[in-house]
Image (cartoon, rainbow, N blue to C red; front, side, top):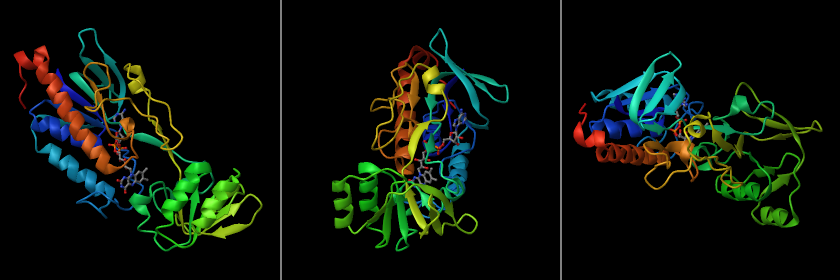
Length: 312
Ligand SMILES: Cc1cc2nc3c(=O)[nH]c(=O)nc-3n(C[C@H](O)[C@H](O)[C@H](O)COP(=O)(O)OP(=O)(O)OC[C@H]3O[C@@H](n4cnc5c(N)ncnc54)[C@H](O)[C@@H]3O)c2cc1C
């Protein structure tokens, strides 16, 4: 019986695992190794790690965790998790292993969904990205498109205007209102409402967007509105509440309180899977830290924590 099992070792799970390990709580961190930002060449906007390749960042986090005897990191995937009659948790790993713990902390990240336009997926995380604060500095002053519709598109385009004078909002077939067109014109943003057919360029670079009518527009960077969804049914299976996707942020998140408790006793969640703010590594690190601390406090307050402290 461990004190905690953390599902996922991205920024949130590694941060939670580190906090629990330093609290001398026996912790198993299970990770399938598919952190969201791995397709990106570098990290943008994380203090102390700006410009670092994501894989290096995660390797450093894993190395820090490995320094603590109470933590174990397993490269595997949790396929099932259940709360048992006595309030403890049982998880099954894809490799067939079964593990039990007093608490469970969900940090599986999110499934970022974007329009299924041919050529987009290959450029995702490079010239095509979802977050201006993460990657637009690297593409500054280039001919750029924003792919989104409605108020979200206008808002995204006006934000991107800080980075380039050559900016076009592409709505992919959705009509803008007169007010929206006026706002864009006032901000010096061009717009094109025609449906898109493809994104093209050499290798994974972007050089052109092609419209359904066959004509093209030369752009070498693109901001795309992405929607975040749960990566699996784990949270719902465990009885946690998952909130619906709101239009603006577009996140489908596990509901948590300020200490990252889900409402199911002993079940915590953090990172992209439980975010109600725009996703970022900084927010994932912070929420993972707080969720880990919250789980440690919960363990200490429970009968098992008081009577038989486990010390790793
Ligand atoms: C392309 C891209 C680029 C980005 N660039 C930046 C940037 O430059 N700066 C920034 O601040 N933010 C950036 N972000 C956002 C940032 O990556 C996320 O906010 C952050 O990674 C969230 O951390 P997390 O730990 O919640 O999830 P993740 O980093 O996604 O990690 C979750 C981990 O859990 C694992 N997992 C999932 N389910 C299971 C399971 N059942 N069993 C075991 N393991 C499981 C996954 O495989 C993964 O390794 C970017 C996002 C994307 C999509």
